[in-house]
Image 1 (cartoon, one colour):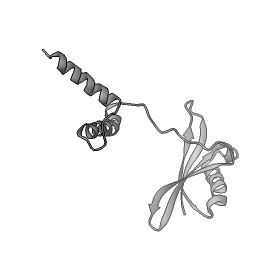
Image 2 (image 1 turned 60 degrees about the vertical axis):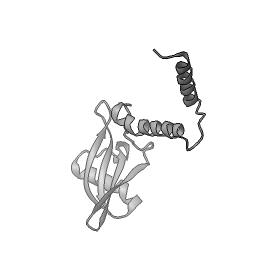
Image 3 (image 1 turned 90 degrees about the vertical axis):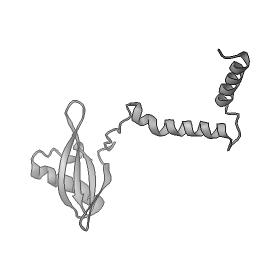
Image 4 (image 1 turned 120 degrees about the horizontal axis):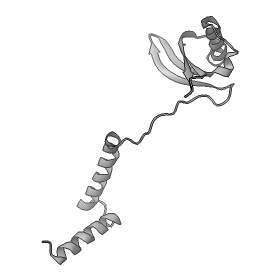
Length: 135
């Protein structure tokens, strides 16, 4: 069984860790910093914080979101996200491609449309289009 003095010293140790009373460079300071770093780097793997990226859609109909998407040969690839409001009621593939190019080319000049995909909300309604272009 632990003696009274052992309990006091353990209590003092815990209190000094809690109030961070140790000098920088001391053994106890290094232990505290190491425990904090271990928690920072390992906790996201062990604890599901439910932290997921939010699908970003341009806020106004006149806005187009642009993200770099790598390179293909000597061309740069960009991903443009265009709100469905900006598409002018296009329905067919040819109309959608033309509407995407009308929205993208004033921003980036002449481009080649590689592909596009609709972005839907939780109810399945198309709210935007992601378009990958080469420039």
